[in-house]
Length: 364
Image (cartoon, rainbow, N blue to C red):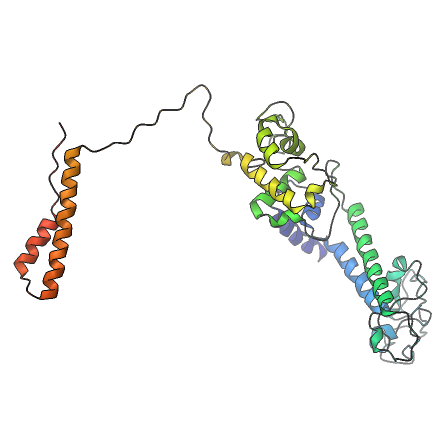
């Protein structure tokens, strides 16, 4: 099931970034900001476990089934004599300590909820008690820490879970050595610039685009030098920062931009990203070869434009008379229709005069 979901997610990542099929899957997941399925399942399980252990036992039945040794601010637990909950277990019901690892091979002598708290062990370091997210439902006489302190602690626990997800993402789904951008959960700011411009940026960042230095399986031995200046390989850094043929547009649009690496401010500052999008559109950087503007070879000078053709004066006179006759005919038809004194022969004659073209004599 996970394999089919991974295949579907890979297609969604390609559609989101508009990258090529040769782009590594690790780069696709980082560029599209879509978490791999296996990591996403583990992340959701950790968040669900964190909600369970931080809930009120009198409100959440799953929290009431935790082991009594769990460091919660409420000591209320459900009774262990419930036959419906222990059905299907071994004859001896042994509650699992929340810090004790699950037995290998697994023995069903404890409830599945007893192992839920084990997912929160790496994130509870330094905490003597777990906070409560719904402490306002408790008895007013209960002595609890301030609600603001518990809310900030719960937010810090969620932040630890997200950091663990990003660390596992970077370590398990490796990217090539030339790609140094770290994975992130929020969308990247340049993804809102428009699908075509964002696709050019995705392809150039991924190292699989239309730049000459980007390798391809169709022509691995192709020339990687910049086709505009021929001085260096046409990499993303060369096309944006140092290509001499783009110097004028760079000085006008990207003044002060000296880095396009992972920590560069251009990836987090929206005005700079808009200027980068304008620079890419003006210079056609990363565009397909068929979309380059047509250029005239330097050896052939441009053809002179022919002057506009002006008709002779005689033709202009006949044209003026024709317009006047048509206008007069329409005026007469309107007057006759209003006065109801129009005969059929007079109408036909006026229509014939109005529609007959004026004779035009050639100029001498």
